[in-house]
Image (cartoon, rainbow, N blue to C red; front, side, top):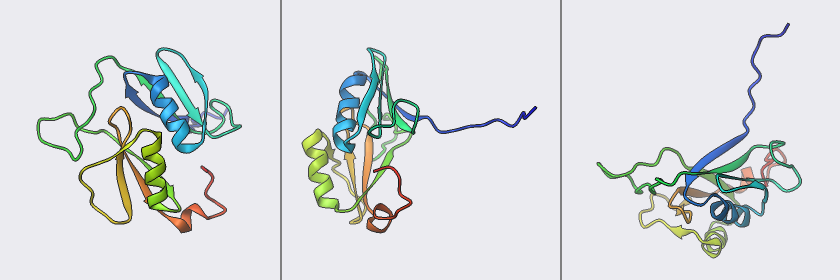
Length: 141
């Protein structure tokens, strides 16, 4: 009997107060679908893949959620992780994210990416990576 564990990435989960609202933001941002939601959880995934068939982003209701302060400050709520998204045209991607409901973080550290904040205050980065984005091996489009 094969006792080696098989582990596959299912999702990256973000806490928030309104899972469906945040899932809707990311679905619009990425042009993905919402295959599942209820009051406690929501999930977004690549079109046509169905829930669990491909790694996605899930959103978990936490009534005590407090947005992180970015950049970090001593004594303030800290971010625990952030998402990076490869883009082919940085400024166009920034405008699209703003249209979807994101805001540009006040503090920036590079000309090659933009730190954005989703509607729940989670930081995420839009990274200009044309060579990666255009690669035949880059699956999450």
